[in-house]
Length: 154
Image (tube, rainbow, N blue to C red):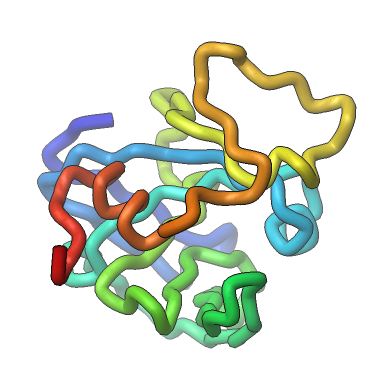
């Protein structure tokens, strides 16, 4: 998905965001946390550089632990509760936009599936899209390579 600017926001419109000049890639996460926060079978995640994101409106944060031991801040609209992005303490320079909050979701085409060991049995996967039983061993580096820039310190 390459565009000059991509925008999105929460359900009530109190929080809006804009992303500029990037080639965005979206992956599907089937972990239990994503199933819980979306009230669905999976979440659509789009990693972007935090510095390339402009946010208008007030956000609240919920912090939770992850299987890797990291802490993730989950940013949401305090008015309607829409989860907009996650930001890990292990890679604070990256946020993972919840791609269902994009204004235009028609161009979404996932490039990978994570945590398929926890996917719902009725979800069918495209055999042409890479799938991981859990997640790539070095998720931070994998996301950075997905986004097209080298991992810091490598």
